[in-house]
Length: 112
Image (cartoon, rainbow, N blue to C red; front, side, top):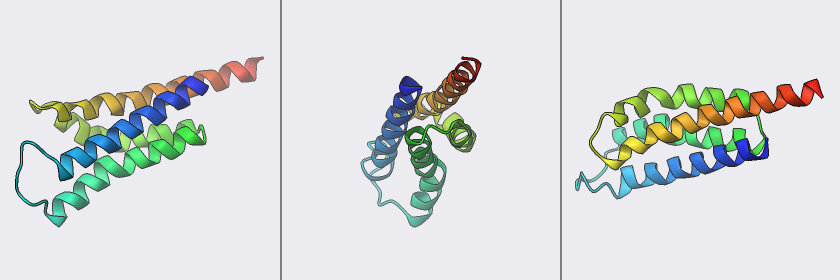
């Protein structure tokens, strides 16, 4: 379960870093960030990343599944863009892999 938690922590930290670049240092947009963009991107990209970070630290697979489902719609949208922001789908899928890995480890520990 240690590696599953590490994967979740790493993917959530990468997602937070990508969000910071997306909002504050976006090479594709030189305009000032509006409050609307900040709120919506924070709600659908930053909040699930923070939730996944918490879920990874406490090793809770349900929280990881929630973070995956929450981040999936905007990650799919960004996956279709021709930019490096399509990496959000990779971090979202890593949330899912981490949750599945935690689930399999818990099942294995219960059988032993």
